[in-house]
Image 1 (tube, helix red, strand yellow):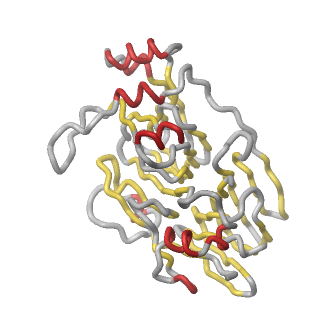
Image 2 (image 1 turned 90 degrees about the vertical axis):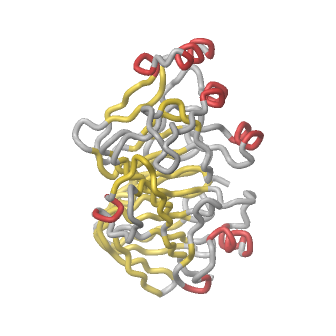
Length: 321
């Protein structure tokens, strides 16, 4: 099978969400504060339907299980990555995610290392990122005494930035930021602080997970160091934003395309692609597929190479197997 797998996004309402997924991307989203577009997902909380070709109408995780050759006969029993677009119309809770070992033991799923490409950031926007505690005891004491201003770190961000968030990192997107998130396929979040917000349905304060947060937070915090690599192809630029050994779970690329570029899998058996801006044409095995802002698709392992022609910006990723 030598065709891409285009996917139908799944949308999730969030207390911090807005309407940018409709106004900026043209998605038909439900009413309410929609915070997350699960764009490429095999997770049971929001699996995508394939919308083209031989597997049209089938769920991505089912095809992953039934046709492993499309994914390079992977070792992972679950589709390992999850691509989202997040609309932080308000600030997210300050949170932390577990690593694989803790998540397997306590949550029965993968851990959650993630990264963000900043699609848009309002002037003055910032992340909550990292913390100041030097020891586990100091971390626990500051959490117990709610010394949030002393504990949490801040990181200014602007449109086009890339941020890596390994498991164990205290973090939050804050108001006025839209990101493309590449992460391990996990839905486990431990909230540390949530502005005393109440659940819209129950009226109760949203649950915090302070014990788990103390267990999994990496102490002391050291901001990850990684190298990006830029390659020119005529007028186009392919930037490897992060790869091994800096990132053990995924390689992430930025494709800034202004003409015709021939591409192939680089660091993984198959490639996940999200069109962030612009439009163009994808050519696979002699067939053309139109590309528009907000499209998401997978180039399977059975496709050796492909060509993209147009004026577009895409974020792509490959799993590390």
